[in-house]
Length: 112
Length: 114
Image (cartoon, rainbow over all chains, first blue to last red; front, top):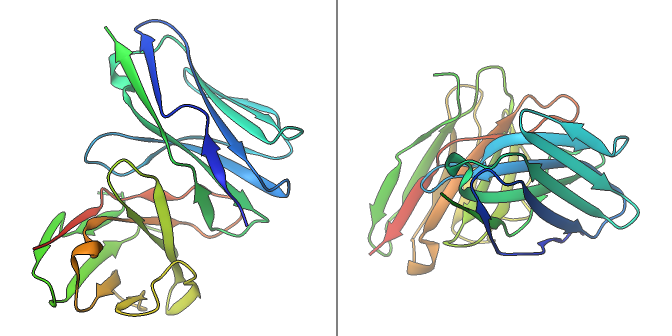
């Protein structure tokens, strides 16, 4: 099976600073990784994904890093803004099967 | 609206009643997933469906819970004889079903059991 954990349940960041949210997974065969953002009262919103044949992928203000050696995934948010305040989940998939396993989430609080 | 649509957004039921939660996937998506989320927790997988087929129901309780995704119409998550412990947010997601594609979520149905 797959278990997914987050290193910190809550992360407080000053506005304008960079944020780093971490995720560890257990199954070395996992090959698809996704980050979601969930605001209060809403469903998870897709941010960025990465496949196991890559170790870095960049989006708009976000970067995902994948270290398969230590089974670790991180989401970096540049120049964090108040609108980035939310709970962030990593999700891990295996073998092309559409089912993914979600981590418990990290709450990002941006201090104005 | 091209997103995943769930209704109702809020549902209140008394113990013993039935709850029916509906999900219309994004246009062009043929795969639907249901998740359950308790406050301050992550999403727990319940069931994965394609049109007219249940692919994986390993996260569904053995009793009282059922799901369907008919050829026409939305996917339905049905909870019979609800109990207090069924109170949660239920999220539906959909994906195209081709290759590694992210699931896209609706805004959920918040089920409250009196």
